[in-house]
Amino acid sequence: MPNNKTVSQEEWFQAHKAHLAREKELTCFRDRVAAERRELPWLKIRKDYVFETEQGPKKLPDLFGGNSQLIVYHFMFGPGADYRCEGCSFLADHIDGANQHLRHHDVSLVVVARAPLAELLPYKQRMGWKFDWVSSYASDLNFDMQVSFTDKQIAAGDTTYNFERRARQSKDLPGTSVFYRDEKGDIFLTFISRSRGGDPLIGAYHYLDLTPKGRNGTGPHHSLVDWVRLHDEYADTPEMQDSCCH
Image (cartoon, rainbow, N blue to C red; front, side, top):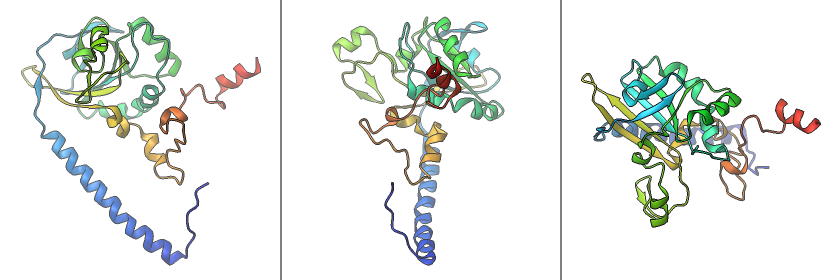
């Protein structure tokens, strides 16, 4: 239990008023960083990428739909994977709500994973997600975006992720890549975020940050893996209650 000091109403008011200045400072700083992000240089995409989708094969331009901006979330789900990433699933739980608005604001959002579509769709159905989930199994997109790595790269310790080159053992890591398509149809990579860069996309974190216990990752990892579960695997979900009774 938190052990904060209890004070008079006037002391409480003054302390929270002083803290509000810090909150406003953070908001203004975040706005400045976002503006700087929009001014970053772009990289022209020159390779054709083909994806397996529920509507058949599509290329990268097709994923934009009628919009000029595309957000791709790279989900950690490789071919034949025998695990389901809690972190990626936690983030994915927040997509459909936002997507109702993004698609009306010139932004398409697609989730991409390396596993074949036949492996992705049963999990999508289990989780009840509605967003477009496509497979990059037949393309180099994940490798070119430096969120997936070949056996040769891993053996050589030649893996670059989040602009850092060091040895890694994971073949797939999470991340977000943002693209823009201009009037001529040319496509540009405008921004990437990796590692904890995905935190702003997880609304539950921001609710938790308002609370006395915060994110409450108390160990042993002091991260989401200490407490986050797939949303149908919490002990009080009907599915788990049924499995406990049989």
